[in-house]
Length: 194
Image (cartoon, rainbow, N blue to C red):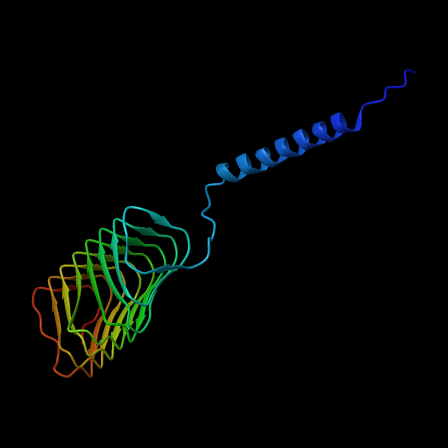
């Protein structure tokens, strides 16, 4: 049997090439995975365009979404506001003591809970909301116009005034303890209305 002696630098270079190839293989495997990976929470400080957010979006200042696809939840904190046009939120939309929401031609797959909003006016218009929607204890005036709600809509204890018109509500519409009482016309409610 022949005895081969390889110089140490040649052996080290060969090992480096092998490990680089293995790392490249691992990267290729990750690219083939269609499942979105949680990239952690992102904070929106101005606006996002036609991009995909892989994780939750947190909002504590004015934020605009235009054609944005959020693969997690959108959470508004005190001082935050959301303007969304042609956006999709695959998780929930939650706001507590934020300024306002202005949502148009957008889709929310999860529940919507808007509570304690304090801005002059909030709007949800021509949108597709697929989870239960709760609008509670807001000082903002709410305009809810020409939407499709796939679950129950609860409008409770609001003091800024609520207008609900031209909506399709697949389940129930519950309006309780609002001052002034909500106004609106031409809603189709497939469940119960009170």
